[in-house]
Amino acid sequence: MAKKNKTISFSDFLNQLKENSITTSKVVESKEERKYFLIVCEGERTEPQYFNYFRNLLPKKLLETIEVNGEGDNTLNIVRKALAYKEERENNILLPNYDEVWAVYDKDDFPNERYHRAIELANQNNINSGHSNQSFELWYVLHFEFLHSALHGSDYIKILSKKLGFKYEKNDERVVRYLFEKCDVRQAIKWARQLGKIHEDENPSNSCPSTQIYKLVELLLVYCEA
Image (cartoon, rainbow, N blue to C red; front, side, top):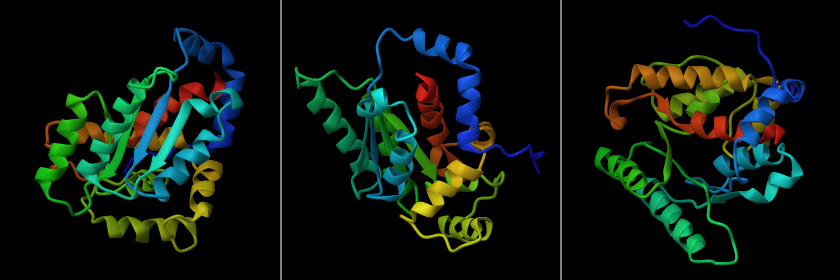
């Protein structure tokens, strides 16, 4: 069991970023142009709800640079749709191209081959694959504990209900608000990265539990003090 650090809420984390604005500004100033993000999500509400809450915490001047789409589709189809949006944007001379395109989807109980094909298609087309095995809710669980057992996604729901103190329901805005106001996103990132190291020599279908969502969150955090 990893040593538990002092919990710091996301809002407190943003305040720390402001106090440490010199370091943060150096990172942002190193970018020649503002980055444009497209996040294409498997779920119609759960994942978009999280990223839109995140988006609304960013400086107002950055709100229009981050687009979040909830498609209500899965794995391979999500990557295909992300690619279609990317190509559509590239053909629009009136708008800048997306700098970061993310496809956010889950392994769930889909066949291993389909999951692997989705990841491969993303890699072949400069799409960032924000995949989770088993599900996006793993990212939520990592805000509370280091989970390294290969549980089914339904077990994440039970864990979250216990940790939250109320029944976890998809699309419940209280969940996202709790994560941002009472949990430590930095600890969640550390534990997600630790899972990645544990499974680094395994294929994605066997890498359970694991999630790539922390990589996207890290990128967005850079812009919290842009």
